Figure (cartoon, rainbow, N blue to C red):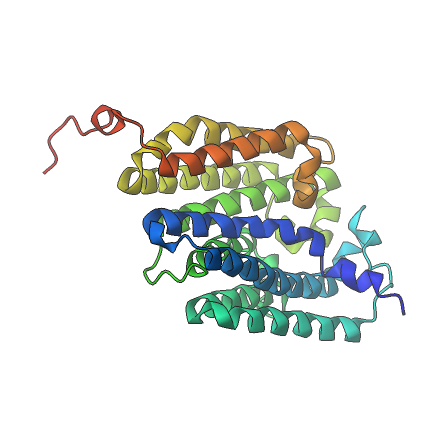
Length: 310
């Protein structure tokens, strides 16, 4: 038996998405600097691995249940399941085994981390498995998939052992930026297929979506992210206001990628090939993190209220 296809459907190359765990840990350290320790580094590594296994479990069930429709996609038809390289019974066992490994690794990181990682797995079930299968419902498909973003943020936060909950505004911003990424992906997929009937056969939510509706949803999620992030920075760290031009540029650039022919936004795991975008994204992230810890004199005065507040 060739085991390579079974590694492929677990999408270990997608583990880079677990980078979304890191900001949760960074913000926790900003809130409580005494959390910095050698143990925190090991906790973070364990957290990344635990999240990775649960995410791979979700990828496996996604590959198995999406196979009939992936067969209609010009590229995804070559994946291991629709191309007949996988024994589906073994794949179901792989799905459960990966989940068990990820959840067992979560136990040393505390109850909050364990429950959040379990929630990540449950959301994967809701997203993929009938009769719920939120993946088939317009807008709910994007919102239920992108909730993985704030769940990763929470796991980064809880991996430090911090006892309090993170700022709700930050969690909401993280959710909305994830929805933005997912909506751009849907838009790119729709344009790539370039035939409404084929698009509907491939993805049920495309029965409702069209380019206009997807662009409207992209605008909504992008604006919602900006507003929630604005609430967070005003309440917790005014220096972050200096990151806004960079973040706005990142949002604009990502939309630009969504319009490219055979857009890389369809395959986030390959975005590293967009060298200019990758450099800009790293610059944006590093600047934002730095502004959490670097005080900028005069900002509080510059942005202080100038009208009476009742």
